[in-house]
Length: 251
Ligand SMILES: [Fe+2]
Image 1 (cartoon, rainbow, N blue to C red):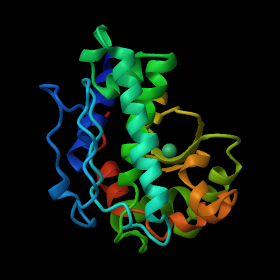
Image 2 (image 1 turned 180 degrees about the horizontal axis):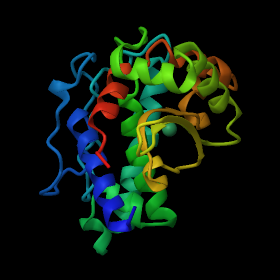
Image 3 (image 1 turned 135 degrees about the vertical axis):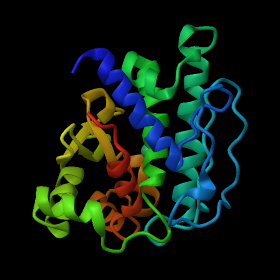
């Protein structure tokens, strides 16, 4: 695939994800409109609204309350993760791009085109929003339809996928993300990536993700990453994965 084609494809992926729940650039003319009301299988937004952005990139609100994922993740854990860590990436990114051409780009464009601190903070801003959508207060039931068929085809079933994904998440050394992704032929893969790395950078479409940075689980689980990974399945948002697979860019 030529670079321009990939960029178009990746941006289409970003746009499709945006229709679910990602409005990641508060004041850009091209920013996706917030679609929390259309988000399936989540509770009404009751989380405290993030502080208004002081730069071009604004943190989207959660589409459920900070305590809505308990007992998997309790309110204190979510409060630190969402209001301190995730908010911090947006704050840092806005500082880094101030007065620079990068301030006019979308998060997806920054992920594809930048390196170093701007990439790290843009990717972490994007990754966390994707992670919040990968969970739902009403999640956790067995997947059905398109995603269930794909999991059966590419992993031999939901349980086999959960086992392989869980092992990848537990064994990822240090900080990073466990991703379920689709390649251009819609074949599913498990992709553990370190630090802020993102599937868009690897020409893959993200479907689900689990944050395995220690800050994501240490209040509730201390050093028990395996317990945190096991609990993820109680709130996993299969509807989000199905949406991302169904709407991924045609190649
Ligand atoms: Fe995190």
